[in-house]
Image (cartoon, rainbow, N blue to C red; front, top):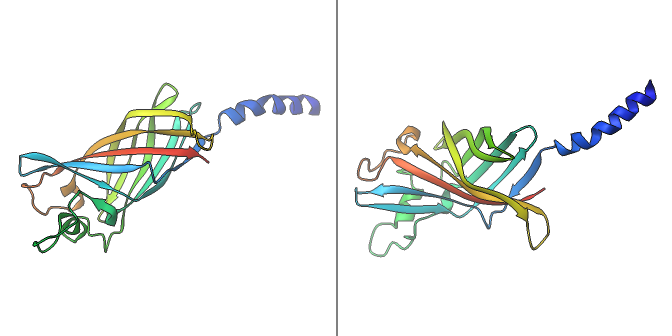
Amino acid sequence: MKRTLAALTLAALPFAVQAAPERYTVDPYHTYPNFTVEHWGLSMMHGRFDKTTGKFSFDRAAKSGSVEIVIDSASISTGDNVKGNRPRSRDEHLRAADFFNAAEFPTLTFKSTKVVFGGELPTGVEGNLTLLGVTRPVALSFERFKCGKNPFNQKDRCGGNAVGKFKRSDFGMKTALPAVGDEITLNIEFEGDRD
């Protein structure tokens, strides 16, 4: 009886190993959360955050996973960081209390509640975005999600583009509404090596 149990346990080990979640650490040099917002009803303005950390994992067999992204709010960049003869540049204004209030809220975070699968790979993620101390649900869909080998260290590497929309007023960011749009399109371009 003991031999039978031992044999069954050994036979099940390869399946247990295959079902283990794949865990990845976000590469901060190839991960760029960025956004667009309407400006004065005329154009779409773009911005991005230059400092991001995080982890993600997924289990192909169980169709489950997790994502946690932490964004440095002071790292915002819109291509306007020289104030010239103005009181401050646009980037300085966005870091101030009117918008991201980076002094009081140095990070914004996204934490998953569910990873959605289509086949073996994720097609989207549902989660909670915390901005200005307020947490609201936000869904992101993957326009792209691929895995391969990192050519420099030969580690497994996955990456893609996750896109979603939210209203900034839902988080208490109401300065310049409606001249500066309420709806934000968030695009997180990411890559990460397997741990």
